[in-house]
Length: 172
View 1: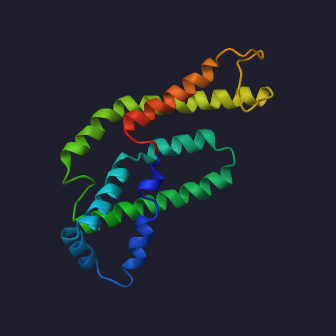
View 2: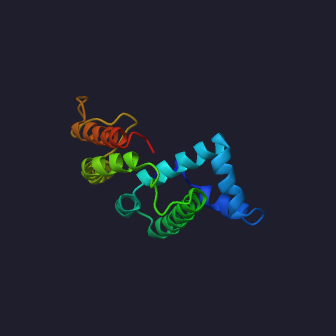
View 3: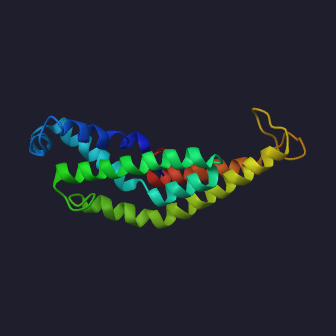
């Protein structure tokens, strides 16, 4: 639920850009240049769909190396806040998607359905990893007992992944 490719780096880039330019220049670009407006709007949408609470849940439950997890999550949280602030400053909004309420409502309506799938996805991935740690795995996992019949747990993980991606309308 990070959607990192859609926003990561934007806030840091804007922060560096503001060392040479003033905020009003970026606001003028946003109003007058369709390319820049489209870029900022896409970043805004990605930030609005990203859910740092659920993203943290993924990290807390699926990343085993705690120091690495904390270091990387700290970087992600800081960049998320920088990017969110940059979008709000450039667009002169109080909150994300303030000027696109229909999209905000769409996200708010689908999250109650996607969020439980996200939690289930984490649970099933953990179960799959635990099982793999107990047995020899191959590139093409087979069901417990070594038979070549379909692996229901793996199928469940894949369905949860697809369900979250479909619900978010993104693979991020």
